Image (cartoon, rainbow, N blue to C red; front, side, top):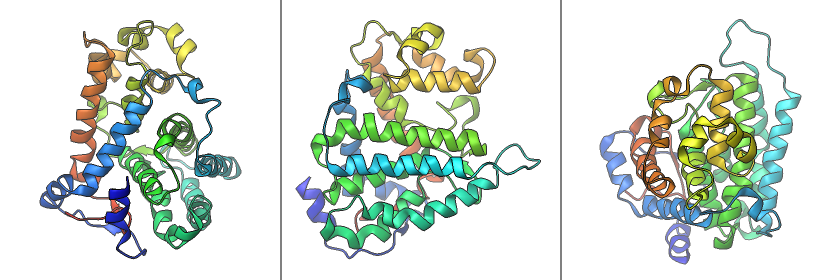
Length: 313
């Protein structure tokens, strides 16, 4: 943790910008210390939620910034209620999302400042750029795993500046990320955001990834909720979607997509049939996240780098 902080505090705060322009940049980035540290963060969060339902952190106290970030996300959710979708002919990509996003941009710097230690407030402009890029593209009006990855980077940067501590990892997934997911889903359903870079039926999900990854860790040794039951039993979805991100993710898909599950989500159906169960699914999703999200130029070329998330490739 300290090593990560020292390595990145040397360069001055400023603007975050794109640095990955081709496959070689991407390969260099994936071998860099910055990516290794980010990856350690993903795995530490994964470890923190193993066998932990969402209610297990109900009475947990975390750093002040955890609560502050939940308030920020709550306010962004309320903002959706204030900006109803415009009447338009096209179903997807409602123009009111651009209005919502403009409001986000106008508030993001002060929102980030509310999370930072006082001596780090000069970073608020730089880190606000990550918040701005976490909810979808304001012109294309789409959302995908690259926007989710940007939110992950924001959490990582906030950890590095000392807003969060390692003891917060469980809360970052089960309190902060769940709230983030709630906001992104609300944006998707209110403004009909297009899936960004969707793999169609051969993707895991049109929009998100981390809820499957961390959600499978939550179920690691669970014998009651089996992988096949999550995709086949409506009762399991009803009983457990408030407690487990993976179950909630399947429920969300079933709400939006009609028809047989194996037709619209063959990959998730295949995953549900993995004989070795949740531990194997979790390790497989970790590999898949690295390969299919962080290893893909169309996704990672939008990544922002700055003084806290350095392009040291």
